[in-house]
Image (cartoon, rainbow, N blue to C red; front, side, top):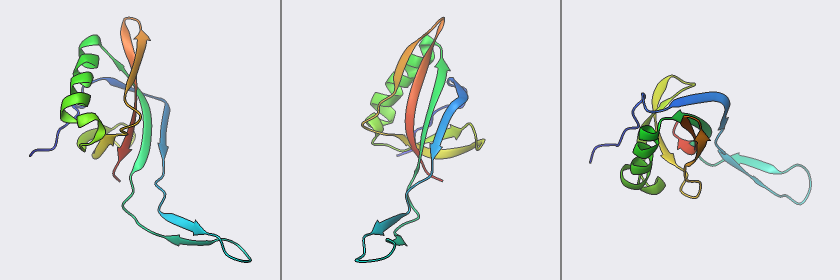
Length: 118
């Protein structure tokens, strides 16, 4: 099955307010005395990215269909153009943080939270 793709031309990302959080790659363990013991557990965790797009009504409708069908509500990874890295990355929606939109006349501001592979 081919990997779904979010077309680069869909929506205009607003870089003001763009937020990317590094992945947690380790864990800390309490010890009887002294500083916590920290160790690396993995290198395969995704970055968390939050951003807002300005979309036309047609683009907003496309995103709604993409969310429900191609991305399966966050279960499926898809190709996404990273506006800061200027490269295609694999991403998926965070399932418990679905896209949300609000009026931004004549268009829409659409906020998304994604897990993005490095």
